[in-house]
Image 1 (cartoon, one colour):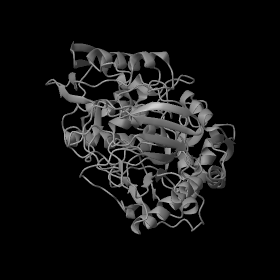
Image 2 (cartoon, one colour; image 1 turned 90 degrees about the horizontal axis):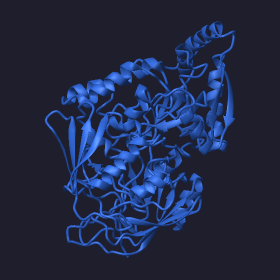
Image 3 (cartoon, helix red, strand yellow; image 1 turned 90 degrees about the vertical axis):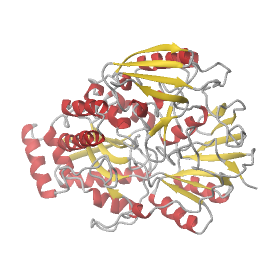
Image 4 (cartoon, helix red, strand yellow; image 1 turned 45 degrees about the vertical axis):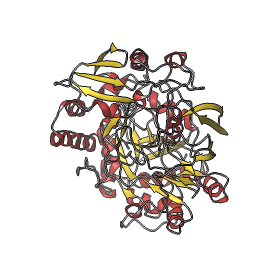
Length: 553
């Protein structure tokens, strides 16, 4: 793990941030134009003509995952990329960031949005041959609604009813206008109900284009073509085109990049400033294809604070730490000024963005605030920050430590193994950590992380990891689900940003970036269409589908 700690794709998953930092030369604390603004897709190879079926690829992913069961597994960008091969979701994002039917044929509300009818596509089967019908989807929903990890997004839902062989009626407790967006996430996955109930994290059984074949954790995961996949291309040929994919977890950034350039892998996830700039140059030279998340929402890297545990159950302690954090110096020192400094969960280019009063770096004010905190707490202001033990993670933590100690705040760095870190955060057994999250194209995908209903008492598992209980945020999020007015919806999510800037559960550092780099053998890496004909979103949480990819000779 690197300077940013654990992450998500949708309203449920505990997403884990892997190796995103690279230590670069310090260049002062002055600002400048972040070079992420200059990123574009380069060297792209697309062909809407006749595809050539067959072949296999090796995909270098940035991390290993803890399993594949949507009810109990935690998928970061790497896990989501793998999961998209053997699972489909009932809805998916189009290129404009709107939710469209995917595995579902139609998603139809009643006049008051208190009921939604999910109409399923005929002829879809699980990998084990079981027919995907309304009864099976209801079984999925009922089980996920009862799971500790996935129950929170179902809170607005009263019940599910089978209304016909291919129709599920969803009864809401109150209107939910943007419900289809929730079905683009982990709770929109359709899997074998018996496998879900088994609790198994291996041998996934879904509806996806590829069938699980083999998993050797930390070494490889292999999927093979599903000959009965439900999607077909315009010529009537059944997707997918590839016969086999091997996912190879390569957590060391330099090794992953070297493997791609040596031809040992065919495609990879890239997430460091050095990688992004290096491959951008090679892409412009036509040596590789580079796909950057330039149109969707990107994740933020930030300090996450446990607002139910001392010292950060004191708002003034959180404010003092925010004043003592020089995010621009952090980006300049560790990333050579590559990233845009963040002041909230949306970048200025986002349609959801609004300016807030989140505290900016002010060492003089930080020293004064820290002294006031100490005066109320027996002369002490100290805490532990959890993070990875690798060199880049420690460099990032040490830089933050030096900033905070200048303000008179005592910090102890505690390196911790990644899986244990996730457990500690989920159960509230931490004071502070570096985190990466909040990249949903629609804010409904992030709302579960902010809602006070998901801020459970320690040590219960909580999806509101900061355990920030602000009822104003809950009311705004609830109202945003119910309004049919886009302008009102936008204003409500902007209110949430302002409340977060007041509550300070997060101290923002920068807007992150995950890119995909592929060899020139691959065609249509992110070029695909949804069943309704809409062009699909290129990258979602650092992932993309693979059923449309084919190889040129």
